[in-house]
Length: 422
Picture 1 (cartoon, rainbow, N blue to C red):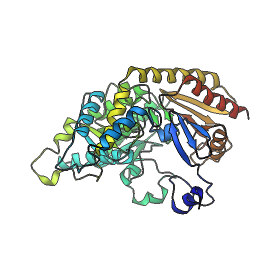
Picture 2: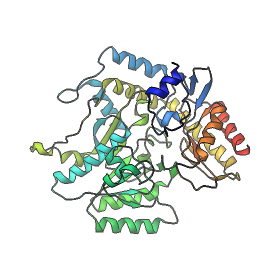
Picture 3: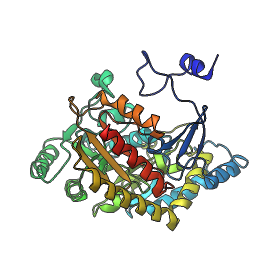
Picture 4: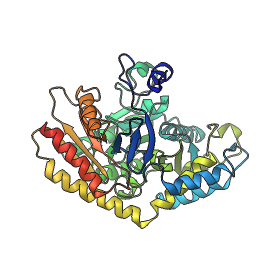
């Protein structure tokens, strides 16, 4: 039985319709920005493998640090025990996070990092004896696939099967210059009319919604309103963190910082599953009590796995290297130049860019949505030309590893121009 046949027989892949599913490409090796399949074909990973890979595949430095950790301590229970990689990682993350952040709580992935944040906010009010259970989120939001994270997200194809089991969330439109007066009015009304526990948002870029982008000044004002009305703010930086928006965190664009910040994806440079949720000191203080019933009873078997923490520490080493920020700046500049060149194209409805993220919305007869049939033809076109772009319906985007070169970016841009002229 071939690898292809075994894959089809034994494996259930995510986000993939199972009936008449086409064979998956068997990747046997990664190096830098490239994947290599069993046939020897290579593909530029233009989307950083679901947005996780910061420094290129099989980065020698991270691989070395992970290997060293495996021969020292591969895993340890994280209740009643601790270890240096987790402690050092927490200390170093807090140096890059806003000054209001005080503690790091570890989990396994982006969805659980958000799940922790939601539970943290709800139990904060529970511990305080306040009946505040309502959340406000943006329309089109996506925060993960666990039940709390799905509840915070928009009701759509990702969670329709579970809709009756999700808790209700109040939603406001993503703000822009035209609607912000009304958005702010609606936001204030929701806060005044409901026992609002928290406001959850993807700062500046709504990823799975189609790389929808909005300005920092609008979010700043909404957070300021939350601060005035005793509403906890939760920033889902799972995708936007670690340089993706051009700064270390998207919160760095804001004057008013979130109370809770969720991290994953690029946290380990794409090496190991790891999530982290940071919180302000006042959140932590609500759990620092004698009553054991007010303990935060949340944890995972692999919480703060030392191997994953070592990968995150190595990735941070590279993120703190000036060369990485020169690369981020180069990618931003090249994206801006290409955006200017292509944004008037007759086949494009919109082109948008924030930091290292460049997104293209294709004009189609169908409206813009995740199940738009253009997705398969877009993906197939680029794969045949050695470029991995996984579209969100009729929206395709570039969010590359930071080690990409100008020449490799130009290969992607040229493929896009060819696609639009095809």
